[in-house]
Length: 274
Image (tube, rainbow, N blue to C red; front, top):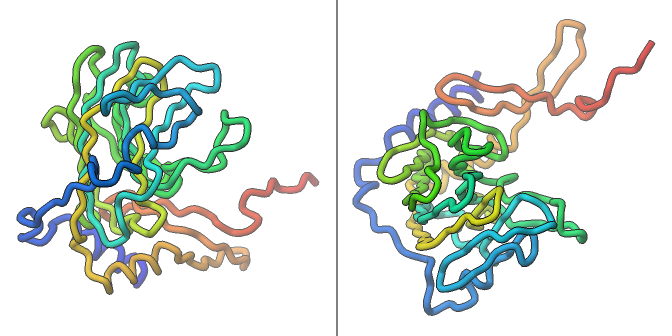
């Protein structure tokens, strides 16, 4: 009960940020003219050579190395003690398939360059815009969809201004000034290794430009962050009616709703045939 009460308390706290939060100044960390190493030309491409970068614009190219495209910063732009805001403009010049943003880990590539050892959104957030062949716009937290929009979709040939923001645990995504969704994450992802920024697409001839990254000190206190980190790694023991014990991980889905995942060592094993 204590575990769920604490998470619900953070959820209520983050739902209404401190009154002075909006008056706090955002600091631009990208573009950074004084740090050429962060220039978009130096961002990590997946697949390799699948993006054309020119004058701050990134376009996906036709490739035989796969159909998923990532363009990820070479280093972390968002620190563990930061809230963030990312703005970008994007356009689908072909049939729309994602004009999305990822704030999370780096791209871990396998040698053959067509599969992943790790995805950026494994440890962060994917602000999916027009995912699934333009069927859905949603927020994915560590690969798990947690909230989606009603009717916000990519219009082929139109320039879309997108803004993604996390203030404490309050996460918002807007498209052309319209809020697509908001989500309150009581266990926000902010640890070191989760501060890379990436563009994501699923087809050629999609263009991104005017990418801007802003940070400011988080509204979370140091003590709150410490407890949240402890709770996020916590697994709960559950005793079943037959007397056996299981270990579960509680994934918050909103308000008082939780998804309970069986994390026991044998959870993925298939039962033996008798």
